[in-house]
Length: 496
Image (cartoon, rainbow, N blue to C red):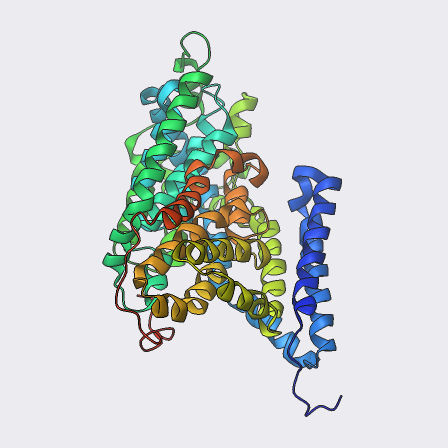
């Protein structure tokens, strides 16, 4: 092989081999380490899989420099998400220190009852998701509080996490502020964001209704015997934190910044800094306990506390171990394992895409889908598969949106059938994969392993299933005049 020779087209075996290696290594790490696999072994498996994919690409004639650039480019594409992840870690730390999360927990304990807890979490997170346009922000703020509230109500943290994620993704999908909700219809072409959202109602509304009914049923079934008296827990919180509505100012600030479309990192990081400053005024004793320097002045103590909470998280110092365990969380450092997981997943995905392996695996699927229902099912399964193989929600949304556009146009399926299916399967299943950037994020901020909350993320499980069933039944499937291909490629259009 000479440096000027063109790389060879990958065979089906070339494209499939890295996927088989990935699945085998992930299965091995899961068997060996169980729920602790994401603490390091899973990351090693991803980097080993990326290395194997690189060797196959090199065998096919791709220069080492090009493979290296592809991997670096894949990692670079995630820098925005990584910055947001670190900002959320900082915000969780300062929200605990400022009493924001303890206040939400205290008010929630006073208002929510075990029987309706899971269903209420679903609805509240859906509303917040629509307002903020972000399932990540919803989970990293109210989600953390709700999961912390669950054990006090003697309810399952895993089910609470499933309700948080279900609600967050309902809101994320139905919000015109969501990045994926804006991006996907632009990639598909011929459909506006508002048309895309209206089209998703066909599958989202029944999926949400079923999830609500299941969560309500579980709440009544799992309700502890007798009445749960939450007053002692609220008194314990009040003994450590000054519970006041002023503590909710960071929540209000974050919502306002989100509505005004301030870039997510700036909105979250700015809110984290504001919360740290607020803590010195609303929780002076908590701030002093965190710093542990009685002779130091209040200004320096407040500044040091902000640094500590944002970097390494808040550590509660109280006489109650439950309070300490619930609210000693956050910090940028707590997200580093998740960042490591994302880097491994995207390195693998970037090499697979650069070497043409993903395209080679997708190409036969289009020709085998002969009916509308089969094409919709193939689109959905492709998006789900890319969430598993590529480990990134955007890859699972972007590639099918581009790959299947000509076929949908040729068969006369309305563009929003493609955009709806991609979101139904690509967006909502991303948090169900432990090594996916979304799954890693949710597990990191909620403190519940992906494999534990997965069975209870009912909306995320039901939505893609209904999309496939409705496709075969022809329910809600829209048609238009068939064309030879899609209109002008909008892939370069701005996302907002």
